[in-house]
Length: 321
Picture (cartoon, rainbow, N blue to C red):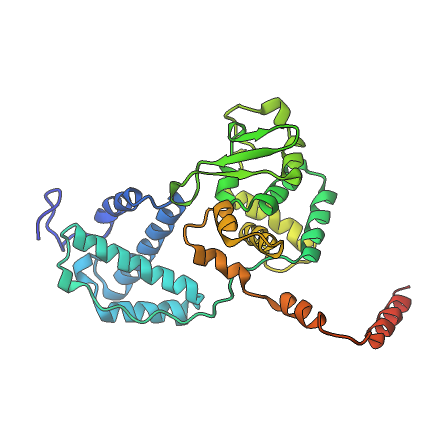
Protein backbone atom coordinates (compact mmCIF):
# COMPACT_ATOMS: atom_id res chain seq x y z
CA UNK A 1 0.00 0.00 0.00
CA UNK A 2 1.00 3.60 -0.48
CA UNK A 3 0.72 6.75 1.54
CA UNK A 4 -1.89 9.33 0.56
CA UNK A 5 -1.26 13.04 1.13
CA UNK A 6 1.76 12.21 3.34
CA UNK A 7 -0.44 10.29 5.77
CA UNK A 8 0.41 6.87 7.16
CA UNK A 9 -2.38 4.53 6.15
CA UNK A 10 -4.08 2.82 9.08
CA UNK A 11 -3.26 5.48 11.69
CA UNK A 12 -5.80 8.16 10.75
CA UNK A 13 -9.47 8.58 11.69
CA UNK A 14 -12.08 7.81 9.07
CA UNK A 15 -12.85 11.52 8.82
CA UNK A 16 -9.61 11.91 6.86
CA UNK A 17 -11.10 9.80 4.09
CA UNK A 18 -14.59 11.32 3.93
CA UNK A 19 -13.82 13.87 1.24
CA UNK A 20 -12.11 11.35 -1.01
CA UNK A 21 -14.92 8.86 -0.53
CA UNK A 22 -17.53 11.54 -1.25
CA UNK A 23 -15.63 12.58 -4.37
CA UNK A 24 -15.64 9.02 -5.65
CA UNK A 25 -19.42 8.88 -5.16
CA UNK A 26 -19.80 12.10 -7.13
CA UNK A 27 -17.69 10.68 -9.93
CA UNK A 28 -20.03 7.67 -9.97
CA UNK A 29 -22.89 10.16 -10.59
CA UNK A 30 -24.65 9.39 -7.32
CA UNK A 31 -27.30 11.95 -6.43
CA UNK A 32 -26.54 14.57 -3.74
CA UNK A 33 -29.14 12.96 -1.46
CA UNK A 34 -27.56 9.52 -1.87
CA UNK A 35 -24.11 10.90 -1.08
CA UNK A 36 -25.50 12.61 2.00
CA UNK A 37 -27.02 9.34 3.21
CA UNK A 38 -23.76 7.43 2.61
CA UNK A 39 -21.76 9.92 4.64
CA UNK A 40 -24.32 9.97 7.46
CA UNK A 41 -24.22 6.16 7.61
CA UNK A 42 -20.42 6.20 7.66
CA UNK A 43 -20.31 8.82 10.42
CA UNK A 44 -22.78 6.82 12.52
CA UNK A 45 -20.64 3.70 12.25
CA UNK A 46 -17.49 5.68 13.12
CA UNK A 47 -19.15 7.01 16.29
CA UNK A 48 -20.28 3.52 17.29
CA UNK A 49 -16.84 2.06 16.58
CA UNK A 50 -15.02 4.71 18.61
CA UNK A 51 -17.46 4.29 21.51
CA UNK A 52 -17.25 0.49 21.56
CA UNK A 53 -13.60 -0.02 20.61
CA UNK A 54 -12.13 3.08 22.31
CA UNK A 55 -10.07 3.88 19.21
CA UNK A 56 -10.45 5.84 16.01
CA UNK A 57 -11.84 4.06 12.99
CA UNK A 58 -9.74 3.28 9.91
CA UNK A 59 -10.54 0.88 7.04
CA UNK A 60 -7.87 -1.58 8.18
CA UNK A 61 -9.35 -1.91 11.67
CA UNK A 62 -12.83 -3.11 10.65
CA UNK A 63 -13.29 -6.83 11.35
CA UNK A 64 -16.11 -9.33 10.71
CA UNK A 65 -16.88 -9.24 14.45
CA UNK A 66 -17.30 -5.46 14.32
CA UNK A 67 -19.77 -5.78 11.47
CA UNK A 68 -21.77 -8.53 13.23
CA UNK A 69 -21.94 -6.53 16.45
CA UNK A 70 -22.92 -3.35 14.61
CA UNK A 71 -25.72 -5.21 12.85
CA UNK A 72 -26.88 -6.49 16.25
CA UNK A 73 -26.73 -2.93 17.62
CA UNK A 74 -28.86 -1.60 14.77
CA UNK A 75 -31.34 -4.46 15.11
CA UNK A 76 -31.74 -4.73 18.88
CA UNK A 77 -30.69 -1.40 20.36
CA UNK A 78 -31.97 0.98 17.69
CA UNK A 79 -34.71 -1.36 16.41
CA UNK A 80 -34.29 -0.08 12.86
CA UNK A 81 -36.27 -1.47 9.96
CA UNK A 82 -34.58 -4.13 7.80
CA UNK A 83 -34.30 -1.72 4.88
CA UNK A 84 -32.41 0.82 7.00
CA UNK A 85 -30.07 -1.81 8.46
CA UNK A 86 -29.25 -3.28 5.05
CA UNK A 87 -28.62 0.18 3.63
CA UNK A 88 -26.15 1.02 6.39
CA UNK A 89 -24.28 -2.24 5.87
CA UNK A 90 -24.27 -1.59 2.13
CA UNK A 91 -22.70 1.81 2.78
CA UNK A 92 -19.87 0.17 4.71
CA UNK A 93 -19.36 -2.35 1.93
CA UNK A 94 -19.07 0.52 -0.57
CA UNK A 95 -16.67 2.37 1.70
CA UNK A 96 -14.36 -0.64 2.05
CA UNK A 97 -14.49 -1.34 -1.69
CA UNK A 98 -13.46 2.25 -2.28
CA UNK A 99 -10.63 1.83 0.24
CA UNK A 100 -9.31 -1.12 -1.78
CA UNK A 101 -9.51 0.86 -5.00
CA UNK A 102 -7.70 3.76 -3.30
CA UNK A 103 -4.99 1.34 -2.11
CA UNK A 104 -5.81 2.02 1.52
CA UNK A 105 -6.76 -1.60 2.16
CA UNK A 106 -5.54 -4.87 0.62
CA UNK A 107 -8.24 -6.76 -1.23
CA UNK A 108 -7.80 -9.82 0.99
CA UNK A 109 -8.40 -7.68 4.09
CA UNK A 110 -12.04 -6.86 3.28
CA UNK A 111 -13.95 -8.43 6.19
CA UNK A 112 -16.76 -10.87 5.64
CA UNK A 113 -20.13 -9.15 5.98
CA UNK A 114 -23.06 -10.58 7.94
CA UNK A 115 -26.13 -11.69 6.03
CA UNK A 116 -28.64 -9.01 5.10
CA UNK A 117 -31.72 -8.76 7.27
CA UNK A 118 -34.66 -10.41 5.57
CA UNK A 119 -37.39 -7.94 4.77
CA UNK A 120 -40.87 -8.48 3.47
CA UNK A 121 -41.23 -6.96 0.03
CA UNK A 122 -44.36 -4.84 0.17
CA UNK A 123 -43.89 -3.75 -3.41
CA UNK A 124 -44.85 -0.30 -4.65
CA UNK A 125 -47.57 1.42 -2.64
CA UNK A 126 -50.19 3.35 -4.59
CA UNK A 127 -53.57 4.98 -4.04
CA UNK A 128 -56.73 3.58 -5.57
CA UNK A 129 -59.15 5.93 -7.34
CA UNK A 130 -61.24 6.52 -4.21
CA UNK A 131 -58.13 7.49 -2.23
CA UNK A 132 -56.86 9.72 -5.03
CA UNK A 133 -60.15 11.60 -5.13
CA UNK A 134 -60.20 11.92 -1.34
CA UNK A 135 -56.73 13.48 -1.39
CA UNK A 136 -57.56 15.85 -4.25
CA UNK A 137 -60.77 17.02 -2.54
CA UNK A 138 -58.84 17.75 0.63
CA UNK A 139 -56.17 19.76 -1.17
CA UNK A 140 -58.82 21.64 -3.16
CA UNK A 141 -60.50 22.64 0.07
CA UNK A 142 -57.17 23.90 1.37
CA UNK A 143 -57.32 26.65 -1.24
CA UNK A 144 -53.59 26.85 -2.09
CA UNK A 145 -53.07 26.63 -5.87
CA UNK A 146 -49.41 25.76 -5.38
CA UNK A 147 -50.18 22.70 -3.25
CA UNK A 148 -52.86 21.48 -5.63
CA UNK A 149 -50.51 21.94 -8.59
CA UNK A 150 -47.82 19.85 -6.88
CA UNK A 151 -50.21 17.00 -6.10
CA UNK A 152 -51.70 17.03 -9.60
CA UNK A 153 -48.27 17.11 -11.18
CA UNK A 154 -47.10 14.13 -9.10
CA UNK A 155 -50.24 12.16 -10.00
CA UNK A 156 -50.17 13.02 -13.71
CA UNK A 157 -46.45 12.99 -14.55
CA UNK A 158 -44.91 10.52 -12.10
CA UNK A 159 -42.02 12.87 -11.35
CA UNK A 160 -39.82 12.14 -8.36
CA UNK A 161 -40.17 14.74 -5.64
CA UNK A 162 -36.62 15.99 -6.28
CA UNK A 163 -37.51 16.42 -9.95
CA UNK A 164 -40.57 18.47 -9.06
CA UNK A 165 -38.51 20.72 -6.81
CA UNK A 166 -35.90 21.20 -9.53
CA UNK A 167 -38.38 22.35 -12.21
CA UNK A 168 -38.01 25.84 -13.66
CA UNK A 169 -40.52 27.59 -15.90
CA UNK A 170 -38.05 27.24 -18.74
CA UNK A 171 -38.42 23.45 -18.50
CA UNK A 172 -42.14 23.66 -19.34
CA UNK A 173 -43.91 24.25 -22.64
CA UNK A 174 -47.69 24.52 -22.95
CA UNK A 175 -49.74 25.23 -26.06
CA UNK A 176 -53.49 25.29 -26.64
CA UNK A 177 -53.88 21.51 -26.82
CA UNK A 178 -50.72 19.93 -25.50
CA UNK A 179 -47.68 20.45 -23.34
CA UNK A 180 -44.51 18.86 -22.02
CA UNK A 181 -41.80 19.31 -19.44
CA UNK A 182 -38.14 18.39 -19.46
CA UNK A 183 -36.58 16.66 -16.47
CA UNK A 184 -32.94 17.72 -16.26
CA UNK A 185 -32.26 16.48 -12.71
CA UNK A 186 -33.42 12.89 -13.09
CA UNK A 187 -31.91 9.88 -11.34
CA UNK A 188 -28.46 9.18 -12.71
CA UNK A 189 -28.60 12.65 -14.30
CA UNK A 190 -30.67 11.27 -17.14
CA UNK A 191 -32.69 13.75 -19.15
CA UNK A 192 -36.21 12.88 -20.24
CA UNK A 193 -39.25 14.65 -21.64
CA UNK A 194 -42.69 14.02 -20.15
CA UNK A 195 -45.93 14.98 -21.95
CA UNK A 196 -48.47 16.93 -19.92
CA UNK A 197 -52.12 15.87 -19.95
CA UNK A 198 -54.94 18.35 -19.48
CA UNK A 199 -54.96 18.04 -15.68
CA UNK A 200 -51.24 18.78 -15.45
CA UNK A 201 -51.46 21.67 -17.92
CA UNK A 202 -54.32 23.31 -16.07
CA UNK A 203 -52.47 22.91 -12.77
CA UNK A 204 -49.45 24.78 -14.14
CA UNK A 205 -51.60 27.43 -15.80
CA UNK A 206 -53.31 28.07 -12.47
CA UNK A 207 -50.04 29.07 -10.82
CA UNK A 208 -48.83 31.50 -13.48
CA UNK A 209 -47.39 29.69 -16.49
CA UNK A 210 -48.52 32.39 -18.94
CA UNK A 211 -46.68 35.11 -17.02
CA UNK A 212 -43.51 33.13 -16.22
CA UNK A 213 -43.05 30.88 -19.25
CA UNK A 214 -39.44 30.66 -20.42
CA UNK A 215 -37.89 32.12 -17.28
CA UNK A 216 -35.34 30.27 -15.19
CA UNK A 217 -37.11 30.85 -11.89
CA UNK A 218 -38.25 27.78 -9.95
CA UNK A 219 -41.85 26.71 -10.41
CA UNK A 220 -42.59 25.89 -6.78
CA UNK A 221 -41.56 28.40 -4.14
CA UNK A 222 -41.77 28.01 -0.37
CA UNK A 223 -41.35 30.51 2.45
CA UNK A 224 -37.54 30.53 2.18
CA UNK A 225 -36.98 29.97 -1.50
CA UNK A 226 -37.49 26.99 -3.84
CA UNK A 227 -39.48 24.11 -2.40
CA UNK A 228 -37.37 21.24 -1.07
CA UNK A 229 -38.28 17.53 -1.03
CA UNK A 230 -38.71 17.75 2.73
CA UNK A 231 -41.00 20.75 2.30
CA UNK A 232 -43.16 18.87 -0.21
CA UNK A 233 -43.33 15.84 2.09
CA UNK A 234 -44.39 18.05 5.01
CA UNK A 235 -47.04 19.77 2.91
CA UNK A 236 -48.45 16.47 1.65
CA UNK A 237 -48.47 14.96 5.13
CA UNK A 238 -50.82 17.68 6.30
CA UNK A 239 -53.41 16.90 3.63
CA UNK A 240 -52.99 13.15 4.01
CA UNK A 241 -53.85 13.51 7.70
CA UNK A 242 -56.94 15.60 6.92
CA UNK A 243 -58.05 13.09 4.29
CA UNK A 244 -57.60 10.26 6.82
CA UNK A 245 -55.27 8.32 4.53
CA UNK A 246 -52.42 6.10 5.68
CA UNK A 247 -48.72 6.33 4.84
CA UNK A 248 -48.88 8.45 1.67
CA UNK A 249 -45.68 10.08 0.45
CA UNK A 250 -44.72 11.93 -2.75
CA UNK A 251 -43.23 8.64 -3.96
CA UNK A 252 -46.60 6.95 -3.38
CA UNK A 253 -48.09 9.41 -5.89
CA UNK A 254 -45.34 8.50 -8.38
CA UNK A 255 -46.28 4.83 -7.89
CA UNK A 256 -49.93 5.78 -8.36
CA UNK A 257 -49.12 7.42 -11.71
CA UNK A 258 -47.46 4.22 -12.93
CA UNK A 259 -50.28 2.02 -11.63
CA UNK A 260 -52.93 4.18 -13.30
CA UNK A 261 -51.11 3.82 -16.63
CA UNK A 262 -50.86 0.04 -16.28
CA UNK A 263 -54.57 -0.18 -15.38
CA UNK A 264 -55.37 1.92 -18.46
CA UNK A 265 -53.63 -0.65 -20.65
CA UNK A 266 -50.45 1.33 -21.38
CA UNK A 267 -47.50 -0.91 -22.30
CA UNK A 268 -44.56 -1.42 -19.97
CA UNK A 269 -42.08 0.23 -22.33
CA UNK A 270 -44.10 3.46 -22.40
CA UNK A 271 -44.58 3.48 -18.63
CA UNK A 272 -40.86 2.93 -18.11
CA UNK A 273 -39.99 5.79 -20.48
CA UNK A 274 -42.40 8.19 -18.76
CA UNK A 275 -41.21 7.26 -15.26
CA UNK A 276 -37.52 7.27 -16.16
CA UNK A 277 -36.96 3.63 -15.19
CA UNK A 278 -33.64 2.23 -16.38
CA UNK A 279 -34.74 -1.37 -15.82
CA UNK A 280 -38.00 -2.73 -17.22
CA UNK A 281 -38.25 -5.09 -14.24
CA UNK A 282 -38.80 -2.04 -12.02
CA UNK A 283 -41.84 -1.14 -14.10
CA UNK A 284 -43.10 -4.71 -14.19
CA UNK A 285 -43.76 -4.57 -10.44
CA UNK A 286 -46.80 -2.41 -11.13
CA UNK A 287 -48.40 -5.32 -12.95
CA UNK A 288 -48.51 -7.31 -9.72
CA UNK A 289 -52.09 -7.23 -8.37
CA UNK A 290 -52.84 -5.73 -4.99
CA UNK A 291 -55.77 -6.62 -2.72
CA UNK A 292 -58.15 -4.25 -4.54
CA UNK A 293 -57.25 -5.82 -7.89
CA UNK A 294 -58.01 -9.28 -6.52
CA UNK A 295 -61.32 -8.13 -5.05
CA UNK A 296 -62.36 -6.68 -8.40
CA UNK A 297 -61.27 -9.86 -10.18
CA UNK A 298 -63.47 -12.24 -8.16
CA UNK A 299 -66.45 -9.90 -8.46
CA UNK A 300 -66.27 -10.26 -12.25
CA UNK A 301 -67.35 -13.92 -12.10
CA UNK A 302 -70.14 -13.52 -9.56
CA UNK A 303 -73.65 -14.14 -11.00
CA UNK A 304 -75.93 -13.69 -7.99
CA UNK A 305 -77.17 -10.28 -6.95
CA UNK A 306 -75.90 -9.62 -3.47
CA UNK A 307 -79.21 -8.69 -1.84
CA UNK A 308 -77.78 -9.01 1.66
CA UNK A 309 -75.18 -6.34 0.94
CA UNK A 310 -77.88 -4.05 -0.43
CA UNK A 311 -79.88 -4.55 2.74
CA UNK A 312 -76.81 -3.79 4.86
CA UNK A 313 -76.17 -0.57 2.96
CA UNK A 314 -79.79 0.51 3.39
CA UNK A 315 -79.64 -0.13 7.14
CA UNK A 316 -76.43 1.87 7.44
CA UNK A 317 -77.96 4.72 5.44
CA UNK A 318 -80.99 4.82 7.74
CA UNK A 319 -78.80 4.82 10.86
CA UNK A 320 -76.69 7.57 9.36
CA UNK A 321 -79.76 9.79 9.18
